[in-house]
Amino acid sequence: DTEVTQTPKHLVMGMTNKKSLKCEQHMGHRAMYWYKQKAKKPPELMFVYSYEKLSINESVPSRFSPECPNSSLLNLHLHALQPEDSALYLCASSQDPGQLSGANVLTFGAGSRLTVL
Amino acid sequence: AQTVTQSQPEMSVQEAETVTLSCTYDTSENNYYLFWYKQPPSRQMILVIRQEAYKQQNATENRFSVNFQKAAKSFSLKISDSQLGDTAMYFCAFVPLHSGAGSYQLTFGKGTKLSVIP
Image 1 (cartoon, rainbow over the protein chains, first blue to last red):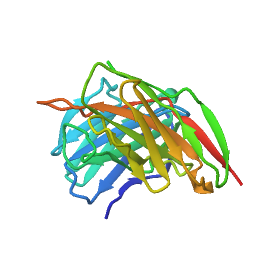
Image 2: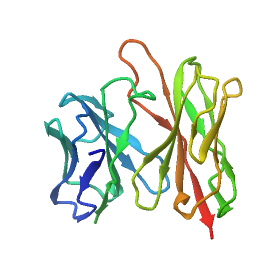
Image 3: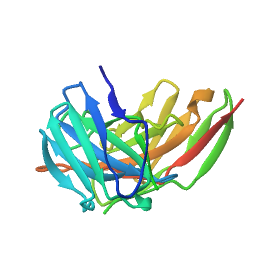
Image 4: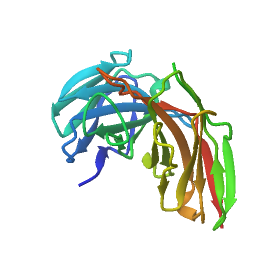
């Protein structure tokens, strides 16, 4: 299995809702990432998990709450979002935490398209 | 800090023809990796090709090849025999090689939207 699977593919939520995005990988990768991508822009890093522990938070607002229940699963809990949070949320994983390289590359999922009304 | 510049926001190519996407970068690092990622309408970012800065030989993956010019800080992607499935947004990305903690952060260019025309 060489895939990163993200669910749901599409999500529409109101500003008072609580929802979650889910990401799963069975490649034995020890680092997992959340990226946010606005239309026609490159992805922007939000969070990095290394060995199931949060290692990097790129100053993301607290209305986004990541969780890594086990080595294969990564969640992003959403609460009280704003319309400007509408974007494609990409999950990625890499074999090892720390240095990305030609041997330790990011494998991305297909993303969850979020619309906040 | 590193910057990656893709100067062509959009390009088009006829099916079966060859197209070259440009990427330049600015860094004071001597060792680093460069990548091209493809993002088709299906949205998944797919690694196309990678290049190590200390390797002079240009990387090749089937119909995809790069022209890496380290002194000029240029890393262009050539797609030969373009196919309809090559229609996508293409992102150039950079990561420095650091000893110690290492670098987890890819610096992306703004992307080039490539359309392959039948």
